[in-house]
Image (cartoon, rainbow over all chains, first blue to last red):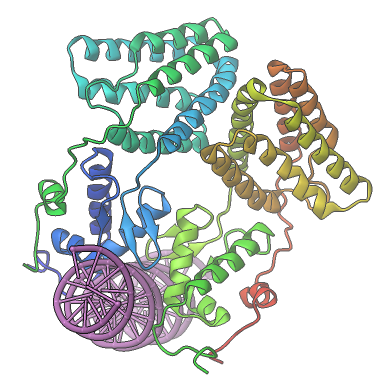
Length: 241
Length: 241
DNA sequence: TAATCGTAAAATGTGCACATTTGGCATGAC
DNA sequence: GTCATGCCAAATGTGCACATTTTACGATTA
């Protein structure tokens, strides 16, 4: 009974996270049009929570640079330029060069086996035409590489770059083709097995340039305009009429 | 008259930043003992601002992982383990390996000149025994390297690593010797001039390992215990009696 | 008609009051 | 003497009311 609807200013640690995840997912899935305004009152209405809760989440997303916060003017979905995206890709490329340099020092059979198993998964997803799985596994490959170093700082940085590029790509890349080529990943693993740093880096570099080259400005993004429609499907509780 | 003391809940965009900078500087300068509790009420009293303002700043620092936030239990100065520090140093090392790999592709005379000029500064500071300048310039050298790539993402990441290692070092390293050796920096520039990636990375790696090897647990840190004393010197306005 | 200005409504930012939770301390039992 | 328990003060978390700023819109004028 008390769980059904808590009254006033009582603690509720889970709601913050729920709202955060909902908005974050909408961003990652490209459901929010770049440049769109995220005002606090309508969001509070949609999610059925207080305005300060929305406010907190919005500022958190702003601190993570996933939303563009302007003082006294609220939050907007960022509108990245092509240069912004190239910046993220270049950072990813540079980071992986460093990762590979370090990785050849401590590569062992177990690591190669794990990466090879991952490649098998990727190929399976590709051959059965599972696009969603392909995209996910494609990013996961690079995550596997950093995680092999066991360094929390580097892993966090890569995760940040990946999620940011996901959002950006949803704006600029046509949804028809956005997965890494599996054989390019395989070439990286091969170079690692051979302990050939220079080749690993070169292959990785080419790989990223290849992905990057597919980017192009796509104005006809059909992303939704109505906030209620976007979040309504994700979290359908609307109160306060 | 109205400017002298604003009444109630009026906008004041600058105070947030002032409090943030004050606490951040205290952290960077090692004035705050690791593990110390930063409660909201006393800080609000010390800085003469409302508790929510302190609260906002504390949570912001927590989001940047400069403070350790525990739900319902407030903020504490993090107590990094030696492994945490090694993690940061390793990340720095790996990142610089990637940076150098990319840098040899676009190194030119202008860049070499700039780096050489910086080395001259460093040597001057070292010979005249200016420790503060040496520490500052030592970090700045690595910043120069990433900035040469002109990539905002990478620059931000390095700045983050640097500031975090500053805080950590203030806990673990004896204050007697914490600067990079200038000639090691010089060796990196030399390798860059020769477009020798492998040598540049090797030298950089040795450099970081050398710095890291100086770390050791130092329990007798004399960091202040009294919050008012720490911040009183930085920002001496205390109101509310 | 287009541009400018003024006014009202909406949105953002902030202090405050209060609920909830935590931590310390004293009291008591074994 | 040590451990467990209950209570109280202090700290954290949150909704609310209100001040400030921005934005939208209509009226007036050239």
